[in-house]
Length: 257
Image 1 (cartoon, rainbow, N blue to C red):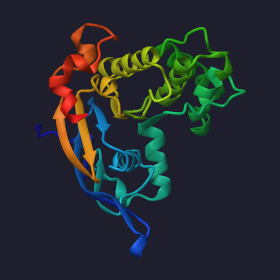
Image 2 (spheres, rainbow, N blue to C red; image 1 turned 45 degrees about the vertical axis):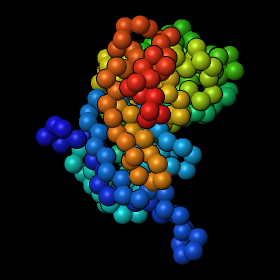
Image 3 (tube, one colour; image 1 turned 90 degrees about the horizontal axis):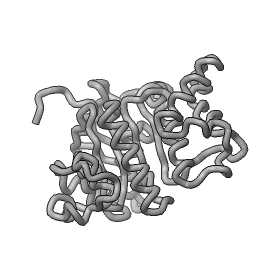
């Protein structure tokens, strides 16, 4: 373990919903360190706490107790507005549902975070075009979501997530609505953003084939981290392209999926 202060540090994180007899404890004391540039797949059965952990990591929710440090700052002590500023500056989000505006072009969808940030129009256009080029959609700027495939729509969503140049990309089941081939394309894209641009990727997935692209696989069970293991052979690092599956690495990842 490195002595370097991690980008993210969770210590004793709990999250309880409701009160009294109806209270439900979704997280029961989570400890987790994430270094800058890591690629972490978060797995676990339904109700294991993985989605609650992701909401906490993304500053969309606050823990009931415990410490959440981002770059040494105690996130749990921040106000709602301060957490919102933190999200806008450092985090990008990708979801299973693409959440694109139906009657709006790809470029305009990608520009939305920059609109909220008050970026001038010329700068918005340039940054959005650059982000779309990074995800392989140069020339598709003026197409609406209805004119794009599911994989292309998710690429637009990823471009929107990275247009602000975040340090952390949080992806919640990013391939859940895609077929196998498109899923592999999206995973290769996430891998490249991590490996070539140094973006820290935190991804919730229930699919071992997708988790096989990550550097680490963290498994949640009953609100705690049940295992946290390095994947010694992430798929894209094998040099065998996008069609390798987790079955080729069952010895490394199968038992934690």
